[in-house]
Image (cartoon, rainbow, N blue to C red):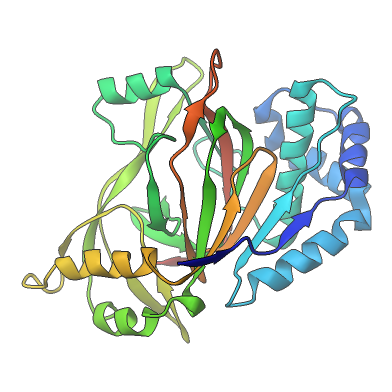
Length: 319
């Protein structure tokens, strides 16, 4: 497999300073994630940043609409003169604002936040195991997939998604991998094989803790989807969850699905970028699939092994 790291953009340190200088005037607690339900406060900071981010967002939009790219990787600078908690908050806020300038962000209906937060920890994994809930540990390989949304008892493929690593508690977190469908050698072959069929898929449950620290499951179960969904004049692949059977053709050879995923994973061209904190990945979810390596060599004495959040676009296609 041939790989390259793609185009990495550097967010302006000036924009981060403006964010820091205007947080207090925006009128919310910078240590409270729930404060980000205040759209007026976010817009206040966005307006204060002004045109400083234009070179970054213009380059990102160009990459995201290029079928041979479909990915923008943006490094968020750090500020040495502030404490770690403030620095993490400011970086996260800037990642949110950059994404917001590129696409209209979907609000998580369960938290009212413009993103979904994921905090991995040994304690959290033990709780999931205790309740018999399937999950992906940072120390498990996560194969090539596209992102999905459960809404109105159906599965949807968002046009855009952002992943921002707030914290990584590993010395060797490995790489993030991206394969544009335009560079997938066998894309046309598998589109012909699968486009006319419907499949049953079990999705990985999405969980969170409520205000009482109770574990809540927001989405799970089996859905019927198309793995190659035609939407107007283009095809939207959907690779998420565990494909269990072919709903439209009971005699379909399910080994073909495995061969299709193997074809994607072993494609000769792949964009690979090192996973690190303060790195924002923005994906055109309709133009490619992503994966990550196993995280290795965890740091000692840390509460969380990984903290990141994911944003999704309002624009989505039902699969």
